[in-house]
Image (cartoon, rainbow, N blue to C red; front, side, top):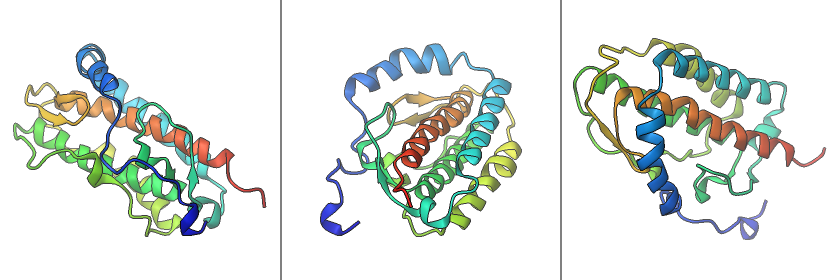
Length: 196
């Protein structure tokens, strides 16, 4: 796609509508994330990861590297709507790795340094499809299952820009939810790929 055909989207970090953020903070975090179960979140993560792998298996390098504009969807920033599947995998590893660090820190009684910032977790799009897939598999099936969790019930919190301050358990719940948002994106990209 030539430069003049690149869609105009909101800048990275523009977030989601304020009403959605309010709903996440007054309902979803305290009544869903806070009441989640570690084992359920772990199983959900593995199932969603396997579904993502199933969607991309057998696709060519070109198909995985083709950027496609997808429709607006819940939980997806406008700036994230024009990615390839490889970029989406790269993003999942970036976010998942940072969430993993936050979960480990909180469970060990430490507040992570810095802040969670959606503008800083966008993919660069420089990885080959093969590397993006390898890194995704490594994160989902090796690094995530081996997170070092000391205290699952730690009350320490680290702020998410949309959900507000979250505990380790709440961040752990968010991992499969985030995967699910981008599984939907991958399916939307896939069905819009040009017919060869």
